[in-house]
Image (cartoon, rainbow over all chains, first blue to last red; front, side, top):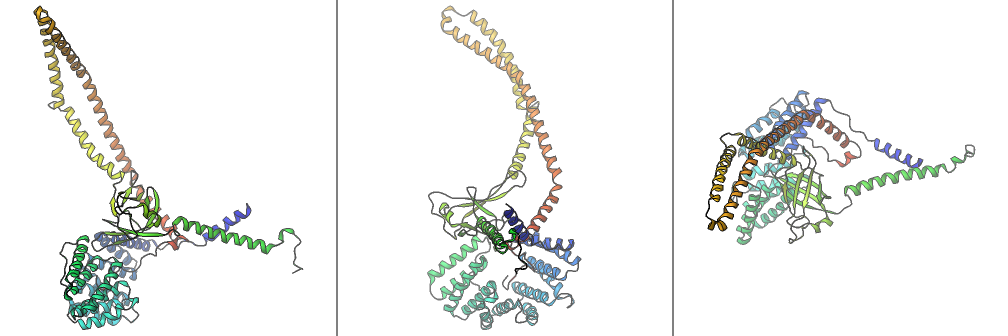
Length: 272
Length: 306
């Protein structure tokens, strides 16, 4: 009986070895809670609420001069604004980091802000401005910088948008074969490789790469990109004279488009 | 060593005893982890099934998935797709796949009057269908909780009761007019009865055999109708008073419930905050903190094609 009691005590003592981390000051804790709630709202798809909460989190971080927290909230707020199609507001928010005194926000936040601004400008079709903003991020980002792959892929994407398929291929190929780039950027790079090859009429290689990126995008569960991949395969198959297979892939793309609930008709003629 | 040797019998084989004690302690801890793992289903072979929800409200990672009230799996992941819907992956024990059909539906149910437990229950599907395969897709439905149903019933019932109350008390309404008509009818029937009595007394003796029973029957019917009218005349006011009382009681009950909810509402945020603190504290303590997903930090994700 005594041994059993001692055993229980030993287990209880071992369990007590771990204690919760000490609590942060109330203001910081509140800011972190707001940030967490904003991320939860984003996961639930409530973008408007997420934007409100990120704005609140930004104020809370700024009120205690938490530069890292404020920069993170600013960038998140800009990203959510972009998802809500409010691109002008998103750019203004990112400019608050980029146009401030260089010593206010650390370099990594400036690189992140520049990269995201370039992505938004590219989406808006302002390619030249995107190239200029991306060049800033490119200069500041060292080889081992976390955004290296993203910057290279975006450079390739901008080159392709300008019609320079050779340059796009050259920039995207190294990222497409690097595991360290992460699944998302690897898939983006592969899609650019496939689209560039399609443009250079290397249809067999393009088909191979579109199929590879389709598998990657399926594992990521990104329906818009799956639709783009299927449409790419359909276009290449049409060029290869395999009309039946092309129609089947175009039908799959239309089904994905319809099931994803997007209103505009499925685009079959454009690349990434 | 001999100098330090103790004569006390209790200290004999002290090293062995200590080793046994420590061995038992380690064994106990290992058993606890093993039991926790078995309870958590870590040693159960599972496969994924997928479904799409309109929103992620009340859904969370790690939420148990039940079949006929028994836990058969957990929600593994939730992800927001491009269309703003929620892609849900649930891990289900492989042995349960034989019980599920391809048209199985996951239903999110909410119990209790206010809030209550939320459960994800799988409806196994139609018997004639093929068995569900690993990696398959099932339907999803959100079942309304008692709270929503009771609010809807209240919203529908109160206007109906008000309308009933108005109808019963309207002096020009159908009910009051019907009562008035019945009263007049009973008076007319009384005079008709008297006339029939006279007619029966003066009826031809040859007609008596056939007409008299008929007339008597009619007379009885008239009398019966008169009685019914009188009874109605007496009973309806009582019924109306009772209906009035019931309506008053319902209104009082509704007001009491509203008061109780309003009184308890201010306490809810504090209660929720305390609960949040407790959960936060437990989830950041060993060993639970190792089982929790790492907290997200930094800005939300965005890649070169977003």
